[in-house]
Image 1 (tube, helix red, strand yellow):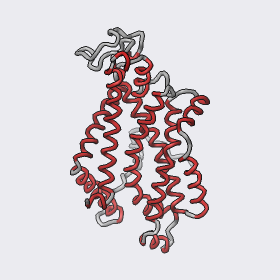
Image 2 (cartoon, helix red, strand yellow):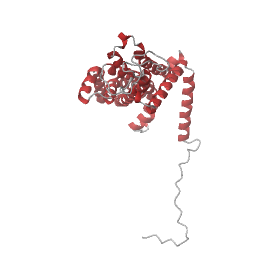
Image 3 (cartoon, one colour):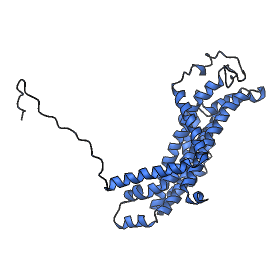
Image 4 (cartoon, one colour):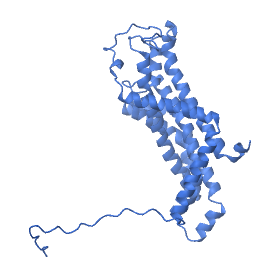
Length: 320
C-alpha cells in the first residue's frame, strides 16, 4: 500500500527518535555492580600509589611508551645507510648524543626507532601467550577429568620444546620476519601461564559461592565468566606484566642471533649489528651501551610493576 502523497507546504511526518539507554537506577543490580567495580579500581590505585617501586617502574614504562609513540611519527631517513652523513664510530657529542655507528648513522636515531619494534614484539607476543595460556588453564582447571589430563600433557610438551630450535625451524620455513619472532615467543611461553591459571582455577571452583551457583542451575559459561574468571584475572594481569619482560628479552636474543627481521631496527638487531661491526674490539661502547641500557630499563620497569602487582594481589605478601 503506497503512502498518501504529501501536499505542497505540508510538513513531513515526524521521524521516530531513538532514545538513549537510560542509566541504571540507584539500587539496581547493574548500578551496584558498577559501583563495586569503581570502588575496586580506586582501592587498587590507592594501594599501588603506596608502592614506590611500582610507581618508579610505571614512570619508566610511560617514558618508553611515549618514546615509542613519538618514533612512529618521527622521520626515519636517518636509518638509511645511504642517508648517513655523520662520521663513523664517533663518540657521544652534542650533535650525536649516543654517538654514531660504523656507517655514520646516529645511534640515538637507531635506538629511538628500535623502541617501537621491541615494544611491539613484546606486547604482541604477550597477547598470544595470555590468550592461549589463560584459555587452556581455565578449561583444564574447570572441566577436569580427561580434558584436564589431555591439555596438561600438551602443556608439558610445550614446556620442553627448545624455543631456539623452533625459531630456527620457523625462520627457515617462513623466512625471517617480526611475525615469526612473535609466533615463536608466543608459542613457547604460554605453557607456564596455563599452569599458573589452572592451579588458581582449581582453587576457585571449589569455593562455596561457586558451588551455590551450580546448585541453583547456573551454566558453565556463567560460572566461568561471572565467578571463576574475575577471581583469576588478577593473577593473569600480574603474570602478563612479567611475560612482557620475558618476551622483550627473547626478541633481543633472537635478533642478536640473526633470526630477526633483517630490515627491522629493534634493540636486539642494533646489538647484533654492533657485535658484527666489532664495537667491543673497536672501543665503541656507546654503540652497545645505548640499546643495551634501554633493554635493561624496560625489563626492569616491567619487573618492578609485576612485583608491585603481586604484593597488592597476594594478601600474604601485603601483610609482610
